[in-house]
Image 1 (cartoon, rainbow, N blue to C red):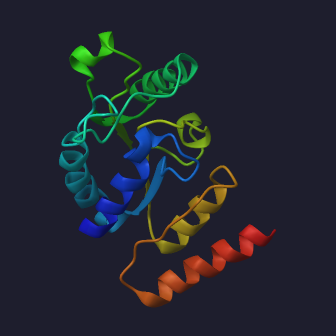
Image 2: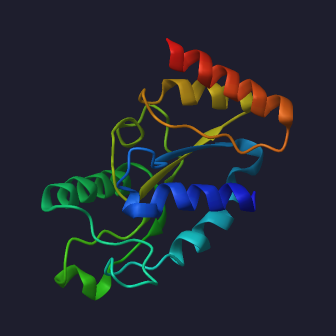
Amino acid sequence: LDEAVTGVLQSAFGYSGQKCSACSRVVVHGAIYEAFLERLRPAVEALSVGPAEDPGTVIGPVIDEESWKRINDCVALGIEEHRLVVNGDVKNLAKEGLFVAPHVFADVPADARLAQQEIFGPVLCVIRAKNFDEAIDIAKKLVAERDAANADNEALRAERAAAVAERDAAV
């Protein structure tokens, strides 16, 4: 579980979430859903937001004002429609540049607007799956042409997820 949290942190919030391979949605098996959130929350809250040139910064400013507005619109949508798990705050940095703190939303349905749009910023949707099969189905319904990863200690499930991803990528 800790490895999954670390992988999600790096993918979702590295480069302020402004990369094509950013993890903007994570599908979590229901049996570990709340435990995952309990480990994810403090890890995200510990991420430092600041100037890109500061070596301690994990989340720097976003690229431009249009991106800043779009990301903040997504945050507002998430607050309105979903359970807010992490409500990051840029504090005094708001006066210094285009900073967006990390936000995590839970209980996001796979067909929700927030889960279906490209955020391209430090915002993460956590989606609950009843079981592995539902997790695969959910992943297939999310917006196409995304990178995907599977964190699983069961080799057969990991191989199955990879086979589904490879097959669907070829379509």
